[in-house]
Amino acid sequence: MERLRIVYSKSKEAAYLLHIDLIRIFEQSFVRAGIVTETSEMYPVKSNLIFADPLPTGVESVGEIAEIMLDEKVDVSYFIREINKVLPNGITILNGKYIDLNEENLLTRVYAATYIVHFIYPEDKMVNKTKAQIDAIKNDYKEKMKEYLTQDNILVLKKSKNRSERIDIKPFIINHDFLIDGALEITLFAGVKNKLSPTKVMQGYREYIGEDIKYSLKRTKIFLNKM
Image (spheres, rainbow, N blue to C red):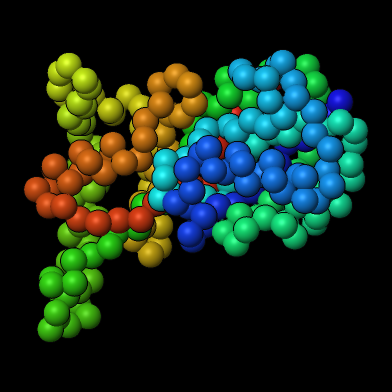
């Protein structure tokens, strides 16, 4: 038995796949590519496949992590080439490596993830505006995001089956910065403990500015605790 860890991207229409559909697609791809997998009791459910931190539906990524239990060792470049041939558009394995069978469970090692948030600016605000005016509008959204994220406490509404309450998400935000194109790059706690979704961050931002601004999300990296 061999344990192969892969990094893959998920984009375009594939971003809208449910997690259960993604599992089915990968398992069917192994069969179609002639790759023999093996179930393992080291995973939470006896399986041949485990994902580090399943993405919310609609979020693209260039740094997803999964592990596959193989019946025997296969050349990594061969594995990537053959599986990519049969995977649907939008899912691509980028790299892979074999790891020790005794290494700690992948799910418990995830502690953070980095996301890129691109604002989708309201078209009605941009009509008949000069470039300088448009840049000023975009910069205003950026400055309000800075104000929002630098508060001592960031209280966001959380709804459960029986009640609603305000929770402080500030402790779950590790760091943030703005890219040259104005997009927000933010790193949040992730995994089975202390997880914060970027959609919850944006929910709070929308409340802060009093506007239902649209946005797109992409995850660029998942961080694992060192052994």
